Length: 483
Image (cartoon, rainbow, N blue to C red; front, side):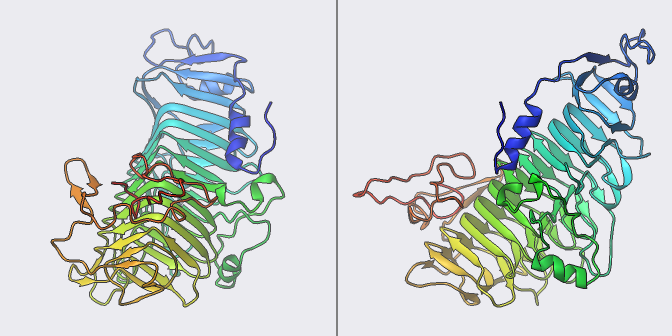
């Protein structure tokens, strides 16, 4: 029996763990005997959906189905595993729309060629789990090219073992805040696990992901600022468990956010709450304009962000924050994060590794690598702004890093011959050389997550070299990658 929990992902386990076994409806448009009236089997998925009752299952045979689905009942829609099952909206509407209050699962399916104002591939106002789903080549006029996860009483989305790629959001406004989410736009609880968000484009914000969910019953300071600016992205507040302040309400883990592009936040644009662990944010670009910022991650307004075992590399921005652009009204904690090989394209840009706007100290760094980040490929500029050092951070440039602590951190000016990480082009991953100055230089007390528990694995799943024996204080390696 499921019991209430403060962690919203357990709600998914309670909701989706129940068997959906009332009836099975088969769909196979390659079967010459298919019939949308008798359903032996159905030809169209929408016909099976209309015939289904609450709690039923729809099983789909291989093939392309030109359809648009509106899900208004508890349902499991599953393609036959290891077979190509494609739902193609033919650019007419959302591929799938989930109504408020509905619990649904979608498995083993590709969703493509959706076109709508918001959520070209999926527009979700219910509790939706997608597993082994490809959301590709969809377009939104405003936000959420691939997926729009809307604020509602029941709005929540769990993405598992799925791919969201080659989607576009076209919305654009003069303040550059309102629209975005080439891959995903979300103002509700969002959980991404073992998935890839790749090659998405937003004209405005969040090439890969645009998340504005705050998890608060009351407006945050950042949202009040947004209201004064006339921005209409404030979530609709509901008095439900989903609206309690909870860092875990937006979670990304064991996932890859890469090769996305936008004007701000090439990989991710966020304000509100977010937790990222064991993830890579790489090869993203905020280069649509002369003042584009946050190549990998753009953190805006009043936020609470926790990152552990996160690799940010080869991201680019035109102006500020090649790796990360962070607004210090928020709160950030980075443990074992690697910000390396990021860049600013324009010569007057700043903070190729990360840029912290405003002067308050609100970003904490521990066991974090910030190195080899360049402005216009020439000027070493790892960071700009104030941060709080928790110790054992490694920096290759400290000229503009207000927060570097010589008694706690390691500074070593980068030379081309120095081995920090070695990039393997074939494997598309880094290795830590045996003589790297990062090896075992992390503090055991910093090699922890937001809950204070030891980080056992690195970003690639390699076991961390840590021990709790009093006479052996072997630290884990600094950054997201363990030697």
